[in-house]
Amino acid sequence: AGNLKPNVECMLQLMLTVSDNSASNILVDLVGKSSVNNSMRELGLKGTILAGKFMYARKKRFNSTTPADMVRLISAIYVGRGLSAKSARRLIRILSFQQHTGLIPSSLPGWWVKTINKPGALSDLRADVAVVWDEDWAYSAAIFVEGFKDAYMGERCVREISRGVFDAFLAERGGAERGSRRG
Image (cartoon, rainbow, N blue to C red; front, top):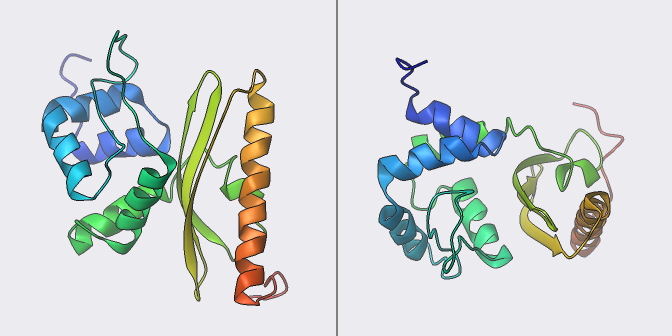
């Protein structure tokens, strides 16, 4: 295992599709904490701070973000803001292989709705951020819930909110579900 030399794309896949903290930390070492924080500032993510590596004990500063920042970030990836067209396509492709789809994506109806998402969890927090789209529309959502002693209840809450957002979005558009469409 000492000769193993993982490439950046492999680390991105592990970080984004299975939330591998070791892969995330390798990438932090590669690009540097200040580079990550500068990129977040350039994208207007004022509440997102990488204080240090993931899952390392800290006494004062912690890694932090906000739902609004996560919507801005996943939306920027989806539209390719701040990225080359090739990089945006690669990130969307990687995110399309997300292994943890039990929150926002699982609450959505039918085969015709597409998503990319990135969930997160701490002991009493469940969160997911996603872009949801079909051929005619797209929206982004971030749902963070905390304070649940039972992880199942927190996850159920995220799913219920997600479905409510989806239903309200379609109602606002005046559209009905396309569950009967074949293609």
